[in-house]
Amino acid sequence: MLLNELAPGVTYMTAAIVNLHTIDLDTSRWVLVDTGVRGTGPAILKAVEQRYGSGAKPECILLTHGHFDHAGSVESLARLWDVPVYAHVLELPFLTGQSSYPPMDPTVGGLMAQMSRLFPRGPYDLSDHIRELPSGLNLSVLAGWRLAHTPGHTPGHVSLFRESDRVLLAGDAFCTVDQSSTLALVQQPAEFHLPPQYATTDWVAAESSVRELARLRPRVVAAGHGKPITENTAERLEQFAASFRPPKKGRYVAQPARFDERGTIYVPPAPPDRAPAIAAGVVVAAATAYGIRKWRKAA
Ligand SMILES: [Zn+2]
Ligand SMILES: [Zn+2]
Image (cartoon, rainbow, N blue to C red; front, side, top):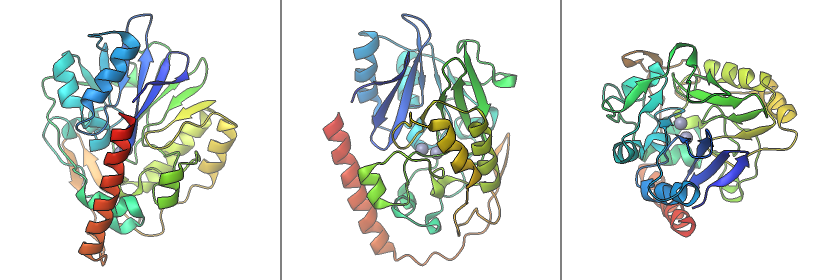
């Protein structure tokens, strides 16, 4: 796997099913944004050492949120590098061993929703390295970047925006691939799509977060899932925000999960889930095999 240039001093790398980023602070200092799924730590290390030199380590790690595909390697990397890990206060319960995320929603539809039956939902325990993002979300080390609280997918999700050249790192506030379409997952056309549906637990908040990000009128956008979008970006994101439609059905569509500083405090009841377990298992196995092959190929 390689770090690909997204914008001056900003890279992205696809680790298995998810993207992560580096941001250069100057010629030698940098920040890692998100950490991929568990087990991709060695590939991340190799890629960052290619760019920053042997033994290089970031000033800190910033997590857009604590889901397993963004925080999966954070425990191993934070301990190896002994660097702080920043996250929004509302994500901390999921990163300090206090609370699990609400259950994934396989009833929302699509391949990834079926796969989500097997996705872990935490928590991680990073108590020795975790730091709460400062109030106002001004992280002094990231000069020139604005952090935006973009809840909905998770309660403490944050996105990063660099005003000077309008670069947006959106995490899972939305996707640039349609995760509900098997075809799109293989072909990966870069278009704006809903955040990962099986793991989004407040659709009203998710919509207002997308609208807030659209108001930034970004020129370059990279999300946690899918390829970057660099052409007619602001117009396309504005259209997506204006036509935002939550899924037709799903556990969290009519009613959100609720959270506070202790983590998850309410989840709506599970809707009927009639998908045969065996069929779901076959889908999971096939998709996992595909993911592993792809990861090995890219590594
Ligand atoms: Zn997520
Ligand atoms: Zn994700």
